[in-house]
Image 1 (tube, rainbow, N blue to C red):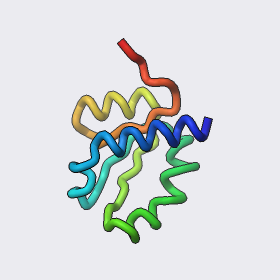
Image 2 (cartoon, rainbow, N blue to C red):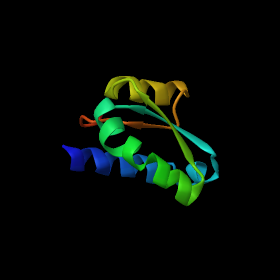
Image 3 (cartoon, rainbow, N blue to C red):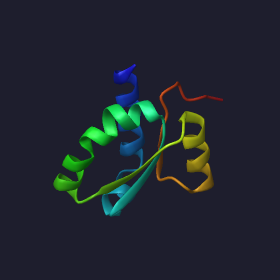
Image 4 (cartoon, one colour):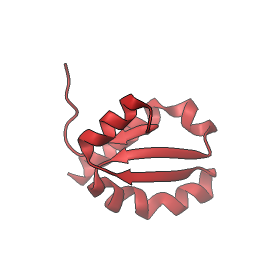
Length: 85
């Protein structure tokens, strides 16, 4: 499960590539599991290496996707599989 979460998070960050590289604060919304296990432990190292600060909102997978669509988040981090049309 952790590997799947990490892969999905990586895809989200790569997809937003240029926009994230220019941002000082990146707003990530979604799974509290990913927040606690992946993003919070690596947040300080990311800031030190890139100058990018993460604003983490652990509000659940579905809410993270909704926040992305609503423009409240720069990227979601879902834990479950993303729904595909």
